[in-house]
Length: 339
Image 1 (cartoon, helix red, strand yellow):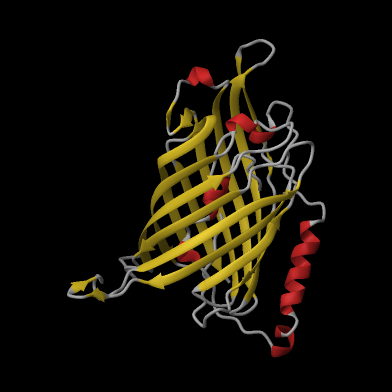
Image 2: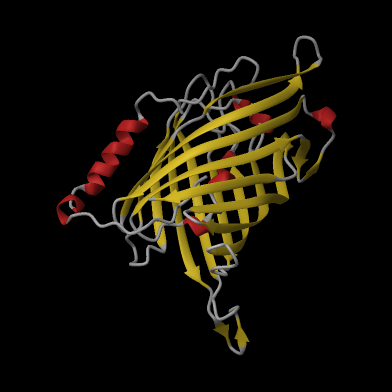
């Protein structure tokens, strides 16, 4: 089992709908999500736990109604064998390398300042090098496919500024999870239907504490907290991926216009992932499950009609059950367009 790590909440322009639609939109939203969730579809999944990519994009929280389309690229190359809280000998793990390129197209639409819906359609390219059970030699294989689609509804009506929001949705079991040269925990799809729960809050750091000023150029710093829970509910072929929680706590400062840039906002985020062991006859129960903490320096810029975000995520504490491949860093970048 290998911990790999877009839930993003996206900034949107203002849009108002009629009051007649407003009275039925919550029920319609839930029906749409449930109908699509249990219908066959091509789909993002990471049987290996890429959920940490789903948090830590706080500058993209919604603040009004409207739509946003985005493209995301995430990268992870796992080749360091890890046991408990330290590096372990590569000889203790038959698996040698797991490299993943995740490409995701996302669409989010806020019907008004309270209700919205989102869909993410990922595509993954994966390279896996491991020990052949029959020959004892090392062999590598590359494959690619659509992953497991995520469908989410969101509510942001707790306050007028939409600074607090919650999400509820599903991950459908449509990613490829039967590739013949990979175990279940290295497949692109999980083969499971998962319930997804998310929440966030965005706040402003006080401008002054006593005689200490906490502003820069008369602008305050922002802070955010975000959590994301992924729990499998229906599984297939004797494999149940571990339940996973991913959280983020961070801060950023928006410089506003800088030269040709309409916005420049550097960020610093601390990430936490906790995943229980996989279950079932097809699972590697002894080598799955982990807790890890990461630091992610990043920045967001706006040029013209496009908004760009990127960060590097570095683990500074990892506690792996058994022997698992880990990566020295992860990379994420997002380009989005509001409409």
